[in-house]
Amino acid sequence: MELQGRVKELQAQGLGLATISYDSREVIAAFVKQYGITFPMLSDPGSETIKRYGILNTVAVEAFGPNRDDPAVKAAVRQYVSEVGATPNMAGIAFPGTFILDRQGRVTSRLFEDFYVERNTVASVLKQLGVGGESVGATTVSTEHLEVTTYPSDATIAAGNRFSVVLDITPKRGMHVYAPGASSYRIVSVKITDPPIIRVLSPRYPASEIYHFKPLNERVPVYQKPFSLAQELVLEGDVKSQGTYRGKDSLTITGTLEYQACDDKICYNPVSLPLSWTVTLRPLVFQRPTVAR
Amino acid sequence: MRRVALIFLLVIAVLMMVQLQAQERTRIDVSKLGPQVGSRVPDFKLSDQNGTSRTLQSIMGRRGAMLVFIRSADW
Image 1 (cartoon, each protein chain N blue to C red):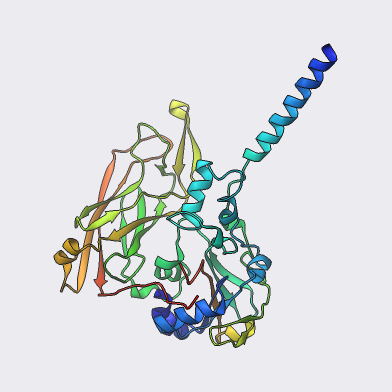
Image 2: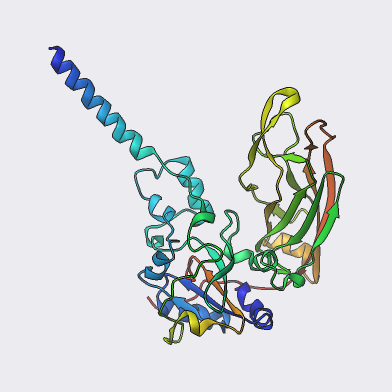
């Protein structure tokens, strides 16, 4: 679990760490033993605390309700419950998310972003929250239309891991870029060009806003405030793919940020902004904890 | 006869409303769920892996804590 690797960093920041899940103490104890977890993982078997926090995952129940065939429900299941679909025993889980609290238990920041999946983005959570983000290499690039700070969600990855490249994009004053749904403009996206052993998962976008472009009396979905894209990637873990990176310490991924920017008068040419990310490679086998059932 | 037809129409209308309600679904906005920035989170008393009872206070570091809700340690 990536959180374990963050314990020292959090301690240095003066922050305690705990997780809460609906698992029984036995399941948690097995997980802790298997992965050498040193921080408290709390068991909330009846989901009472999860409910009191108001973050009970309703999608896990909807997956078996009257709307189970609704495409929106199916998409929500993939997003908030499990990539492989829900099973009835998943009812009672929380919406995955993180709170940073002060000594009095007041929320100083929180992250419940749609597309942030806890298991692969602890680093980016910390970075976004301004906590010890130095361990992942962030690059900031400025163009005439926007500023982008980009970093991999995890400093270290292993075969078969899912991780993200995160792009925090701030359009310059008066500028907007195009969100999915806009036709005849280049929609903002991340393209991965190399290496081929990186599989690109379907992108997820934050909510956009409708922009009224007066010269053409057009209404188009755009981003004009700072927004983040997290493009999920998988480092292929099959034997053949592993052969291409076995023995290497690091992996450099190259790609581009594709976008088109306009202000209230001019639409600029589409841009392909070259970017690269370097991650450390680690041999790792990640298994499900073995619990006597 | 007209009255029967009217009742029949009414029944259809009610059925359609029920159907619509069943299909209506509010989009989830996770950013609105749970305690927001500035508010105090509820305290708790939960067992950790060793069976030790933990509260908000007991997980605190000197400046605060990071509390992570994970889906499951099992799948």
